[in-house]
Length: 149
Image (spheres, rainbow, N blue to C red):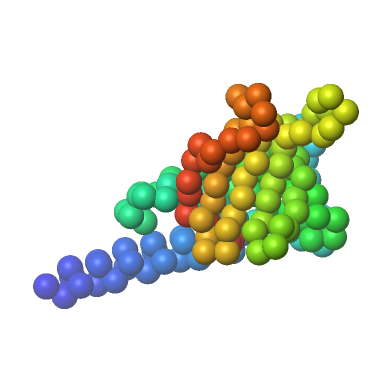
């Protein structure tokens, strides 16, 4: 019986330690639009990860997207899944919401974006795909739970 208890304590400790090391990792090299940048460049970065909103099994939740920005210049980035490769994004704070826009292009004299990701104050992440919109209006195509690293 003691062996089972010790085994369970060791497994729980290893899971806890691995979760802490993943979330505290703040010195990764990121490849953004083909350029390698370290997370500590430009004063460090703030980063969030998004998992499925309606998946309540925390042990097996899959990171779908990561978003962040560099503190010194507010240049944002979007990383796909739990990787280190992604795209540059325009980061802004709109009221209490955090917003990343990418795929920027000019259309009829105005600047538009193909994609947006918004984090609301309660941690809800909303992904918008404007590339299929004729009028620049879109409903969220994905809803996620976001957590800050």
